[in-house]
Image (cartoon, rainbow, N blue to C red; front, side):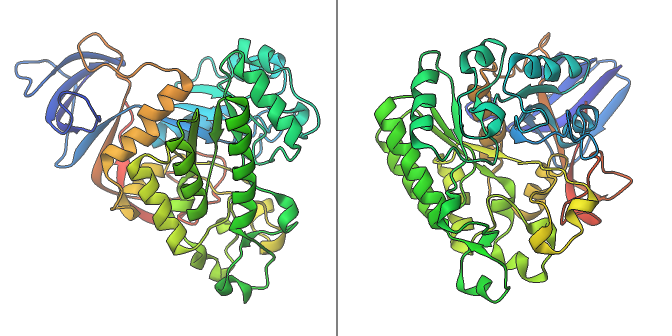
Length: 412
């Protein structure tokens, strides 16, 4: 079937026609024709709206999938549907499944079970066996079987010598070590940001210091080993400053931020809604603003959904006992369009497509006849309700579930 997309604005930083309105004819996932104004072309369906934009196909570098082990939360089939609804062409899943992705058999499981899906699903291998922080996984074996990099998910590698060895060993094949900067020993069991306003909530707190100390340690190790480090999700102004300074020293370093840390600050916790219980925790407003500015100026390289599906039994509980995380995959662009007006679309394309492609070693999309349609089409004007009828994920642990959003992906 041929689809004609009329007068869509291209959002593709550094592309010759970035910012221009163009027409595109697409058939079965392939670009048939592209131009300023296509005339006398045959088509079956026409897509036309006042505020259509076209971005390079999105890539989410951090999301959790339940399969294998926790299929009641999310399986590969449902995360594929959620990714399509959100405009993501590729997702990279964390290794903290059951069993953990710490050997080639588990990598092959993800690859073989996602082969027929429309979304390209890649994965991290765990840094340590079982993501337990005790012994290194077979890193080269995992790398040879196609993992994007190495991560222990939301488990920080607390053993400094083990982290040093991981960076040194992975350097031999340009492997990327992904750290989650959090030192649990600073305040064990802390769940929310440490601040004067949060003190009255009666929930155990964790200071930004716990993140910044671990981040500083890993930056020292990176400088010593000359390896390759990606800091998965930072959440404080202090961490932004540390990353910015380290990049000034030309280290082989990239950093990411979770969308929830741009959308919300710690005041969202006042209602004890467990959907706001996240890792990293929601921080102060000054931190949130610093993170947005860091995405804009490139200090933070990538923006991730940190999609973490949870079943209702684990979420609809007292805050102290509820699981961490929120679903974000299918609503990410809509939330940015609705609530992050100060984040330019060029920065969205850079941090959610172009920069992730470098980390995943994926080619940039080509806008010409005969090329794959590796793009995300988004209508900034369409208003829709994110509810049981529209939700594609198995889980609904989002503070926006049941809410009206502006802007929607048009899957092609």
